[in-house]
Length: 198
Image (cartoon, rainbow, N blue to C red):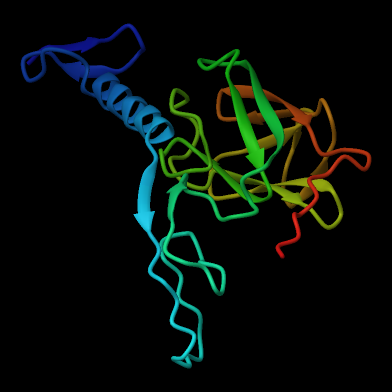
């Protein structure tokens, strides 16, 4: 048995593995995440029969068909209708993903390494896979909040975050070994107006 260290600092048995299994797993996760971002799913929404009375509405996937809608084919991108407008960004300024940006949408934006997270930071092993923290945009108050999740320490402007806190433009957010700058789009009366349906 020979334990070796890969170029990313992981230790593994090179008699068992030809290359670092941790790096391979991270690469597979990154590829799966990028495929999900590129792919879109097409689904058919069945025609609603208004003659049948039901006590609750039917939701197909993440899309709820509007009343009186015929059968239509729609693209589903994994977010609820009305939640898919960008409200701001996190920009990685320090760490393995330096230079990368992450979109923030209305409502909860869960942060973690897992590809099912709203903000997926794959290359930082010090960030929890799921629900490290949550960044929330509240469209009623037009404000952003950051709250710790079940990850390691989260910091805002080099101070430990112990409960939900409002964040402002250019705040520095530290998660794991990475640092991010918060850049809001929805500020000072700049909001997305909801389209009224006729």
